[in-house]
Amino acid sequence: MEHTEHTERTGTETGTETGAGTGAGTDSDDHDQHHDNHNGNDPDNGEKTGPAEQAEPTESAEPTEPPPSPRRRWPRRLALAVVLALLLPVLAAESALRLNYTGDPKTGTYSRDRDAIWLGHAWVDGRKTDADVTALARRLKSTGIRDLYVHAGPLEHDGTLPKSAYPKARWLIAAVHREAPGARVQAWLGDVLATESPTGMRLERPETRAAVVTSTRQILAAGFEGAHFDLEPLHSGDRDYLTLLDSLRSVTRAHHALLSVAAHQIDPLPGFHAFWGTVAGHPKWWSQRFFGQVARRVDQIAVMSYDTMQPLQSLYGGYVAQQTSLALEVTPKSTDLLMGLPFYHENRFGHWNHAETVPAAVRGVRLGLSRTDAGRARFGVALYVDFAATEADWRAYRDDWVR
Image 1 (cartoon, helix red, strand yellow):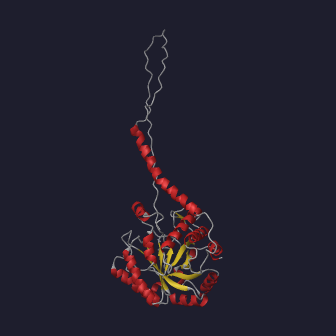
Image 2 (tube, rainbow, N blue to C red):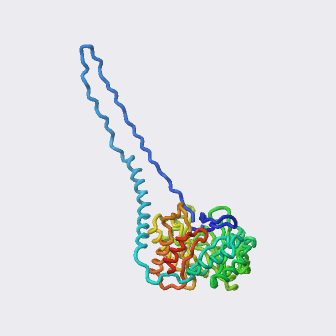
Image 3 (cartoon, rainbow, N blue to C red):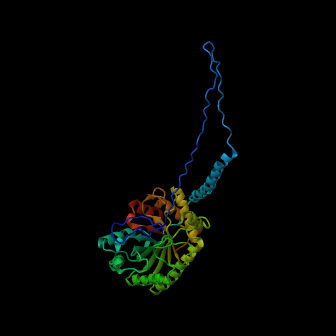
């Protein structure tokens, strides 16, 4: 899930998810069964009688239906078997998630002051003012937020980045450093990949990857303290992506800057991305191995742990706990691992507003952290996204995570 298209360069910012960030669902099919009943009518057959004779009443026999033949029964039995084969694993998995949400987090599993937030394009295109930066700094003061992922793209499909996309970047960076010393401003760069459609960025082209590297040098020269990439839909095992990260890491290290990425969720069951790719055409998840390969190449990795298709808070929280544990198991101690919190509100397939809440996500994060690596220092949460957040979201984040 993903959020490649959640922001636009101009216009009012809204939080709508890509088929990628961007997170894509499948429509369920309705199967109607039609049963035809054929009932025969038996007319009364009697002999004519004379005027003096009365016809003797005849008792008509009730029609009897033959018992269903085995041929008629087996399609129904097969259909029932298919339904059970599909439902039972789902019910088992959901029960496991509900169980994963039980228990108490360990003491001290709160913010390590390494949190982050995704900020919309309005911060670099002239719509925000000094007063907005002052208000943002006041908001950040009572939190553990250290990194700001400011939308400075999107990248063009060929990997280039027009300088006109971020005309107020230098002003923003200077204003943030003045009002919120210690906060780091990173350029959030993304694009739609041509992995599931004919249009988009093609990482398999060396010239495209080279252009992305050049664009990164460009934004670092503009004063950004890091480059945060969100390329979607990014399929598990993409070797061209790993090659790109290797090239980008050389550039960011040379500039003493950060390299960070928004990451897909990890297979809840081994190989689940391959199964989902076959049935839905969108392999939403990454294998745990691929997640680890990405995490070893960056300074920060932020899991987009929302748009999970979970219908209840307890199931969503259990899912986040599972994702937290899976990510912790393969993320190097030297890499910051951030779990995404849903600071937006939509109701659609893939994201249910009543289920994917900040309190449920934070509790899930704390449970996963408690069970896997409670003392990990380089860990935090990432808030998505500023322009869709409510006061209730901020309050839940502060009360449940910052303390």
